[in-house]
Length: 112
Ligand SMILES: [Zn+2]
Picture 1 (cartoon, rainbow, N blue to C red):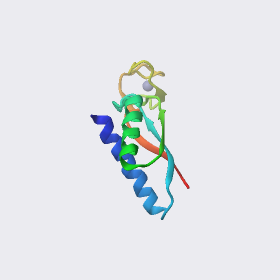
Picture 2 (picture 1 turned 45 degrees about the horizontal axis):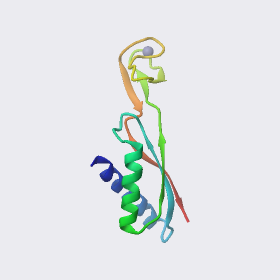
Picture 3 (picture 1 turned 180 degrees about the horizontal axis):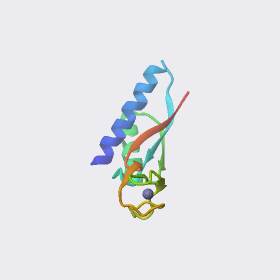
Picture 4 (picture 1 turned 60 degrees about the vertical axis):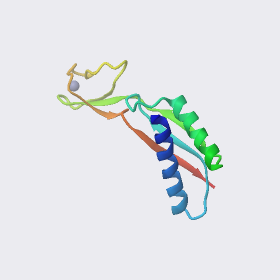
């Protein structure tokens, strides 16, 4: 299950940050996922909760779904991509480069 390995990757990053902060513990973290990341927010939420049970930790995970955005290869306009319509909003060109929305990223960790 893909979400479980993503949850593990998030937790590894949280642990690394805890080590860097010498003794502080994470209470919560926030990840951003885009529609092209292939991650189901609900599945990730439950995979992360399972992981926290196994490790005896209580870290609250917040998932922020970020919109899909692309930059036009013809007119260089950056726009949001709605309903998977991969055309530039300004000139209609299909040459869009995805600039956000295909990633998963740890945005924030609350330490105490
Ligand atoms: Zn364009």
